[in-house]
Length: 148
Image (cartoon, rainbow, N blue to C red):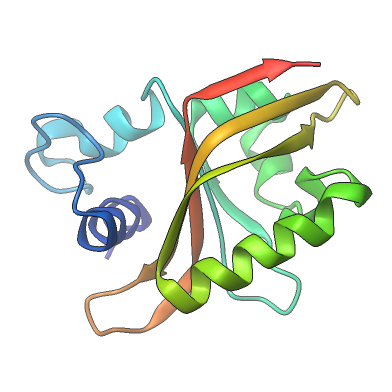
């Protein structure tokens, strides 16, 4: 299964909402789903299941917001996307989301590579569960942010 398909299927299964309007085909090329997800007008990112989870996906909006290349972004421990003071709140959100499947309405402050701070709002966070019920990490999506 391609990661994009995991992102979409987990989100839709847990929230009951569509991630992409009129999404058809598969994430491995049919219908251009992977490209549409990468170019989507919302921020989408995910991390894996490591002890200190590392980001493993960021669409164009995420890469631009955090001011990173794909290579930089996908080698970053996800906890480093938040300022130290925000990390305990972030950890609680991650725990709650893992236990319940998803959480929405979260907001917090994040920091870009340059040090520029921004507030993210109305974030949906969900667990990535594959077709066999195996936990593969967590993802977040939002379209509301402002620079501080």
